[in-house]
Image (tube, rainbow, N blue to C red; front, side, top):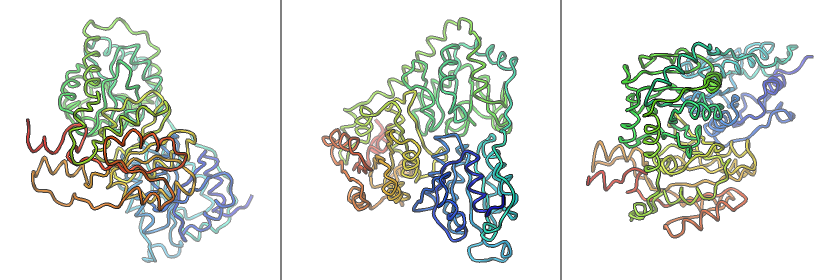
Length: 554
């Protein structure tokens, strides 16, 4: 069957199981927009900025496990979307970014908005490919999906010359290609089991590759009496109310928590790259020589041994490993094991306990913890919580206990601006779920315009803005490194609630603690999009410290 290349492309996406694409329309891929307009196979979401479109695709991938898809125009569109490519690489998320390009005859001439995308994206994308022959589209799309999903998962950039999209091709769409995975051997699993059985103080650290292995994680933890700590922005992977929960390895957690975890006599890292944030600056485990034996299970062999001397490293499918380990019958653990698990969990409970007295000490605004505490009591057990980058998220990580069915979406890359776009994507993907996003005043001003997308598609997101009038994370660094020398972090903000009303959403202001409970209840009950502006304390700059304490240690 002969068909236009643009129509063939849409059919290929559908056959790969990719049912949604995010875009900012551009003249360099007009035929694709035309094909999508007449297709009921791929839902097209129009966004207000290419960075927002890319972030939505990344969030969609996190929620589905399938590649997120974004279409952008050449030059400015592609460069705007580059933040999503970087986030996908850092987060290990499959992403397909399609970029319209100048006509084939003009490539290399410095035509209007032309960029060499192999050069531009070559350092962060797993594969950058220009489709010059429409007949190759089926094999290119199938390969792109496979490569994006092959560990380490990541972004693919497909370049579409605009004249190629009008060509006609006889090629037929191809089905999905198998993602090759290595299964762990029985002897390999048995070797790990033997090391766990002998350890008095083992600690499991789990990461993103275990995102779809939650049940197996619980069974391994219970069968083998091993406490579980979650990596950065992956706090939802293990039930925080489980007695084996050992805490979240996020930014700036208290040294005492790191010290207790560091007393482990065996570390089992499963599905995590063991990056600098999760390892607290490469100290848990210590690089390059850990203080305890390290077992590292990750599907990409290049990650193993990259920064650490590893006692045992298996490049294998994480789910298969966990299922195999859970199926083994564990011997009676060493006597000190119970005390070890209790110490870790007790510390987490003490750290997560909400102190209203401390929060009420804030005199320059609302301690953001009041808001997190109020929201916690009104969440369904399958709610989706989204965090942008910033210190405000520390209240969520410290005080909210993620249950076994909660979802957490955040940028491991640490990029600002993902909060609102990710909320829109989550609302489109999971209708009927509560979608709550936490974002700072800095991050909201980067991509908060995607509230217009939420309005256009009737996505009832609940957006809580911590407005402390500052780039808070950088301000915290300044207070530590250059006390009393503050530069470039003070902000002048709009009235966010009024701005939300201008978009057609509901706007609510919280400027005193007494209003928190009622405002949160009103926001959660409202059927449409809501923006809650929390005029939060700058002094209470994170859930763990204040500016006053940093300047006047007690």
